[in-house]
Image (cartoon, rainbow, N blue to C red; front, side, top):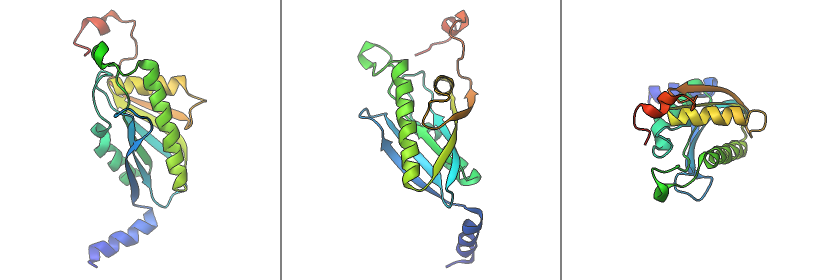
Amino acid sequence: MSIITAVSAFFAGIFNIGYTEMKDIAYGSAPNQKFDLWLPKNVTETGIIIYIHGGGWNMGSKNDYREHAERSCREYNIATATVGYRFVGKDESTMETDCRGILEDIGSAVSLIKEKAKEKGITITKAMFTGASAGAHISLLYAYKYRGTAPIEPVAVIDFCGPSDFNLKSFYLTGDKN
């Protein structure tokens, strides 16, 4: 055993460094209904950061935030997850769901995230949702709509350039939304 390995093992026990990673956990039957979860070791209670990818509601991947989620868990000793969801599609032939279905997907993923953490002896007490673009929009919608009823209480949202007012003509008149 090298000195670096020994020192790392020693400090991991003192500072609760380390995590368990669970990949591609399915919460539904569609290909994108999966999440990845990182749980800090040596804790019994924690909050969670839930990353939701962007992509115009019709593309993107939970893997877009993998690096951020893993680093957040490792550096801040907090649970993290990246969540995929069914897409609204670019046209009728590729439509898997609608906005309501996307929010149901997030709710199903959050429920299973809570269960998986409990299986590892961890209680998740609160959630911060974050994403960019469509992921930020979904984070905002979910946190506001299900505050008080979500399986894990949403307490914060970090929105990176997500639309929040669909009544603005400029949203529809500038740029390609697909």
